Image (spheres, rainbow, N blue to C red):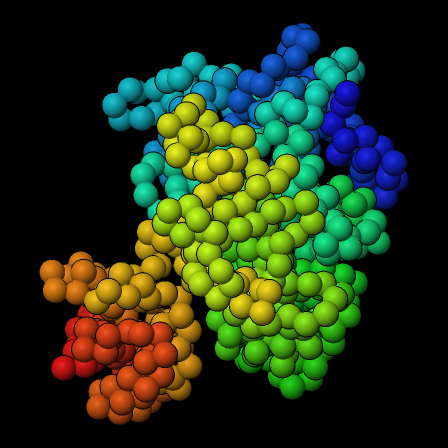
Length: 502
């Protein structure tokens, strides 16, 4: 058996697979170059037999061809983050037990620089085979192994909220399940064209965008890095059908739109309107950002929920009503439930931990059986996220470990408080956290970035917040605001802590 992704690509030979700012590459180009890389990796061996291959390559055709080459040689792909410093790269390489490193020449320095302690380069220190993408790969492609879909394919590192990063291991079968679920839900076709501006060491960029596009036989237009004006220029071209991003990117695109001329704004909005779907994920989308983007683009952003270990689990519908602040229902082939602290199902309207089961769920944390065992309950993956089901739709309340604040006998969602505070006209952005307190267990604290020329009047704000936060059962006497004042140049100065309620 061979990898279905590769078999499907053979049906789209002459069609564009990857487009960069320099040129377009067909599926045939991708198949040929990845087979050359696979032959190089094998180095006369029959099969890599799940050897880990770490690669540090910027977004582009070489990244995709390398990823496919690793898979076609029977290896496990370990993508490295291009912005990480040497210690973080070294941790991933060591923890995964990588035996081969593939790097773009731009990153040869960081991987071949000599450490102070060992006096050797990272590759030399760990006796790793080192390959640059600028090398000449074998012209004659050797016989490539047949790779069963049950074999391990990918290790992505996620730190969650505690401890050192863990390697999340997914098989080709897991990846196929994650991709086909989204293909079905979001109706991908070979006619789609998507602009890819997301990191390629993260599931959002690797699975939701890149692999979905290539599975469908669509075009994936890759930018080497995010730039708001470049993205708007591509949107204005009017030939894209899909766009996926994180809330921060939408905020930056909104800012760029607001500084454009009226004529330019019209063209930008028209470019958005020509797309069939725009998606937001990886973080909570503030309602004010969703509403502003809808005004600009005509799109009510589709929010979804997922994580490295499970792929995507919940999604608002492609067709039909989408609700702000909600992430919809279970995706195809995904089971989701909410349970209490005892593992018992909770009724609708009651918060509980999200647990997920399905063919897309990862198989293990790399060489960490204790963490793997702890992550599952009766075959269900314990996400560590809290949500509530209202009118059949899931609403995320936050991470149990950091976003759910236990104060005065109540469990309070930091995300809900943040959403309320952002609605104040003088608050540009905020972050809510719980701080340990002997009397209350945790005190609810907020850091605010202010906007506007008028100073925030504490008395007025105290009255405003008390009224709006009462519904969330926030004990008003223990909410503190850490105000971030700005100087005449608009730069945030040293924070000062003020009591919101006395």
